[in-house]
Length: 376
Image (cartoon, rainbow, N blue to C red; front, side, top):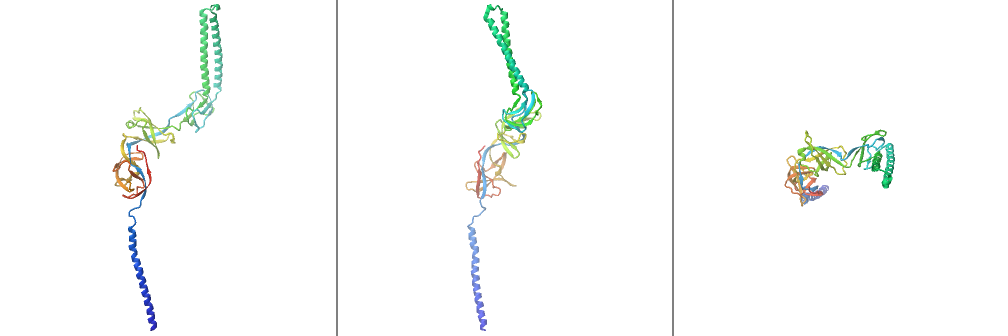
């Protein structure tokens, strides 16, 4: 009986301790939601700042453009020919790059050397005869009446002397011609360029006009394009025109517009100068963007600034508070990487060109890059 009472007391003690522990634990757990709620109210609301790149809204001269095909050509493309008759001894290799005045072909100089030596000898002979006749005439002229020669004889002597001097002059011309023909046996590059093809081979006999080499200037390039007469009315020499070769584009300067059109196609030829460092291949097909109207001053942004949605077109403007503001726009004329926008925008404002796809109205931004371009 006493043992049962003792066990009952011990059990009551355990129950009391367990109840106290539960009370303490429950109080602690019950307090946690309030604490977490208080801490949550201290965290910032809304999305975190987004990293973006900016560009300026610009005031630019833009005009609608039409594309026309063009071709890369060299300003100097020559088929160098022989200027004298001789056998071909050597021709520069295809692909060789030469400077102006470099040797590009050599002809056999034997015949030209013989002709030069013969002309030199003939000149010396005729010069000696002219000096003799001149001396003879002066001698008889000095003797006067003592020589017993008539005026007719003296006139004949003078005529023979003058004729001899004319023969000397002709001999000098012949010698110069022979020397020129000898120099022409060494064919030199008329300009700097690259040998494109050999039009003749070693051992063949060349005559004046025989093509030896095709030489092309690969450093000074132009674009030739044909456009309707009406389209060329908006173009002036010196204007810059965008030229595209695949994905690569550059600005060409209008050198001339050939003012003669084809009577059937009504097209005029346009020639555009390309920058000297252009590495495009001659013969490449390009696209020339010609203005189809007079350029107008408009508000423009880079194409990358546009956010295209099914129901709207907009851009994000970033002010001094570094908050993104959505501005709906309408599009106008496009030229190159810029496009006209009509909306609540002013030149000089910053627009997002990278990172705007996921921006929200009023979202803070961090600027990773600002692109500055001069207005055109």
